[in-house]
Length: 184
Image 1 (spheres, one colour):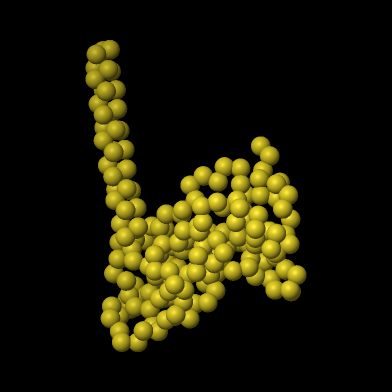
Image 2 (tube, rainbow, N blue to C red):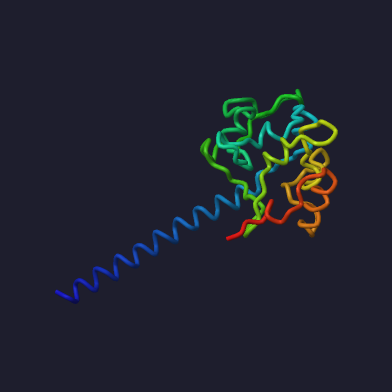
């Protein structure tokens, strides 16, 4: 009786490992495939007149930045049943690569891995009223000039805290440590 229980347990364990391995391989290949989806901010800004980052990079109802768009948000313009080719450069065309994904998929990886004890709110930075009366900071100081960018976004510069302090100083925002760093 004990021997059959051990054999059964070992078989279940081996089966579980095989299933886990198969699932991890599927996820990894999908992630790698997503990173190969060609994307150009320059094309979207110049050809499609998207002049607001919030057009694709939205906020949840709770004000949290949702980061990269879902495939469903992309297919709102790049219709799944649209034309593959067109001579009209102002009209987004169908992207066949999106057929491999559901509308809820986000195949692009977000760059920041671990923010540790740093809190950053895109919504606060983009809606703060500045001394000149404007209410918007632009994305370029941290994320490069997207009009010239043809690759995936990155944070510019190597010393991010220096950039943050410079920006807070320039726009006369609070530079207290506790504004961005939580006390755990």
